[in-house]
Image (tube, rainbow, N blue to C red; front, top):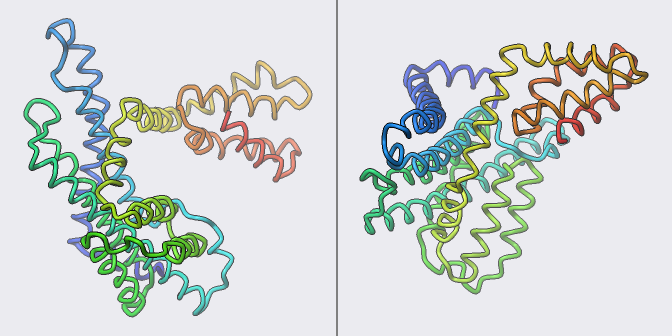
Length: 332
């Protein structure tokens, strides 16, 4: 989408209010993830057994943080995708490939949204609760809403013109039709459909299009419903170890905002900077040290890359070497 179209869309009062509410909800979910474990620690000596349901609530807040984050990433065009589409020259061909990639992405998103909606209805009928009387279906509501929002945003960003958006929007209707029709792909050869998904990923469709699309197509080819994919997605998203990922990421941003990376660089330079090749050693050790506290290589590169990369170049290291070393060191 063109910068002018993006600026015009973001200038709408309704859009600004909606985006602000979406960001507020995501921030509230993340804040609640942080506060609940702290409150559990504080109140456990007072309340026998701690705060009722704090652990399952944190697990379901992780679900909200993850899927609201995906929706926000789709809004800003930051869903993870292959870079191969950037090699296509600007022009009609590239525009057509963007529309096609958005079409496939919207189709997959709406199939997954339909499956998530069915899951929500099933748990609502069963009356399953998280804790303290809060029903599970209310937590699962984020799944169909987020998938639908991602599909709509892929369509919106497919083209600056309404013709391209309309073509991509057909994928929304196809996805609703496929996701809501039982047995429609049973005994149908799936390799053409999976091939389309793979081609769309090469042309710029988000990576989840390949993973989610291939999974749901294979399930539907066996006569199963998309809800089975949603059941597995939900089960994986509320695993007890997953809340550590966004919390580690938050810790990394706090450390970066507090200039901890600069102070750590001075400490390690004073310790080993005098050794031949000391700058490279400092970078490797500092990245490994920082990753221990943040838990994620991406956060380490984000927090330290802008500081360490110029330092390496200043000391005469080649650009390719510097980029490779920082990427490898951040993954330690």
